[in-house]
Image 1 (cartoon, helix red, strand yellow):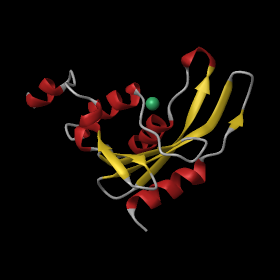
Image 2: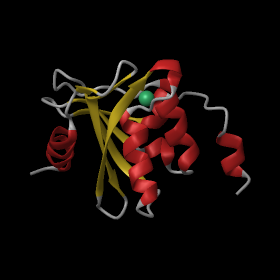
Image 3: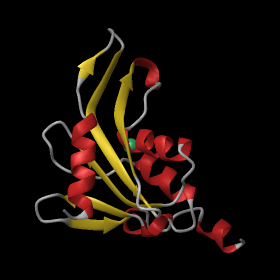
Image 4: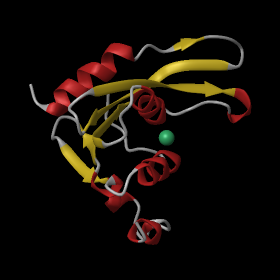
Length: 135
Ligand SMILES: [Zn+2]
């Protein structure tokens, strides 16, 4: 089983769309991150009124941070139809700010063909790059 299959299975396990209230629905999108230490953390999207929610990717990353890790190697998010999905702008930005190595995070774009893209290719001319050079 390759890394993407492990991540896919992990995300699929927590993906469970449900409506919690007239304001909140969760679990339509699920994500899994693979860390530098080889651990997998998962998260689901939380959609709310008044923009209080969180994407599945950032939820998975919050889970990773809660468990004491911060270096991501690979990210996968799957939508309700089971297809891999590219992260939104907020998630791209969040991952870039997490670590100087953020640009090298590998993101799955298509599960069947295992097509991937690097985060740095999704964030050209990223505004924060100079700050990392000062470290
Ligand atoms: Zn997002």
